[in-house]
Image 1 (cartoon, rainbow, N blue to C red):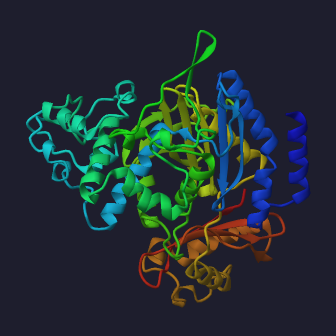
Image 2: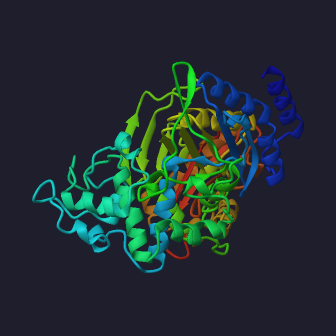
Amino acid sequence: MKFALTSLLSFIFITGSFAQESTADRAARIKATLPVIEKMYNDYAEKNHFPGLAFGIVADGQLIMSGATGYSEIATETKASPGSLFRIASMSKSVTAMGILALRKEGKLKLDDPAYLYIPELKDMPTLTTDAPAITIRHLLTHQAGFPEDNPWGDRQLDTKDEQLIELIKKGISFSNVPGVTYEYSNLGFAMLGKIISNVSGKPYQEYIDEVIFKPLGMNSTIWEYTKAPKDLLAHGYRYEDEVWKEEELEHDGTYGAMGGLITSIDDFSKYVSFHLSAWPAGNDPEMGAVLRSDVREMQMPWNFNSLNAQYKYPGGRPCAMTSAYGYGLRWSRDCEGRTGVGHTGGLPGFGSQWQILPEYGIGILAHANRTYAGMATINTAILDTIITLAGLKPLPVEVSAVLKERKAALLKLLPHWEGAEQSGIFAENFFPDRSVNHRKKELDDLIAQTGNVTGSTEIKAENQLRGSFLLNCPNGNIRVFFTLSPENPALIQQLDFSLAK
């Protein structure tokens, strides 16, 4: 570990500044963390008695490094690899959600439609209260349907048939809440989404998702039924009990596979993770997937608040409050540093997994293990945090729009004397009534008295298309210039602030 870390820091020193890095430089710095990352995964697997573990790191649209440790099958001592096929449990949920959005794209359903339009048996199902609203597709996507948390029960339902799901609905479902008021994780809700996909598409949801999502992404090894996996690639599931590994019986595919039945590899699922990352930032590239990039971003939004953990600590011990929510088959989080994560965990008898992307950093992680409810979120969070630190990653810069460049250039012609400012045409109608030109000039003059006269400026750092900042270079310090533009066209400066750069 010490040698790997020293080598990595030497690499970072040699490569120098990260300010104007290329994609290749960034990937190289991430790859340089591999010895440290491998040791972290190996130690975690050994400590938690994982028979096998496989992992991958995605950046810039591809799987840039991967690895594995241990065995995919103990009896035959088959080594795990990035090509090993693990059952990924609830990581399947976002794929089902994407299938729903693909049907919406085809104009075949709407998210706020009552679910009974597509599963008629729900129409006559008794509700918890007389004022309870109808369950919508959006309720099902965001765990807001009022069903109880059902992980222990749901984990044993994978091979349930459609007829059994319909019979359950006909008998009446036990609600814990009315729809639309709170978050409660429901595997049953996603089984219903799978049934909706089947009913609307006219084919089993597995077949629809294979055709519409997996094939266009080149995911040719991802399957639903374990008997279709090559024997040398199928990861067997185990629980650690009485200080030995005991094999868990694999369940066949069925109706509840929509909530947790997918079987895939690091090599294959990394393509799906890359597709989620490709939605950021918004742009003008041709659409390439089953759903629009805007649909992918919609999936990733925090639609249903889950929790606020004010005492959260990163695995390394760093305190940082964390808030969490649920999107469409995706978990969303944001920490005290403003770092946003999107992804999902997975856990079933014999397996545990997690994937996560950090959209602002353009990086993603995925890991699969074959031990019952293997907790992969903890190690993946630690790995991402380590990569960001060791590779010196920063949030990807926002491209500076033409109008921001134009307004900056116009400002530089006016500052610091403000001559002709009121006639320049670059300020919104609120600007000078909010604060007179004389007061604005005095503010800047006072700062220049401390820093010395302006000698130049830096490039703009954009926050979005209409807001950004830059520095005025001065001999004894720099002055930060922040401005934000109005919604009119052309956009004009509505706010302008000066401060000493820290």
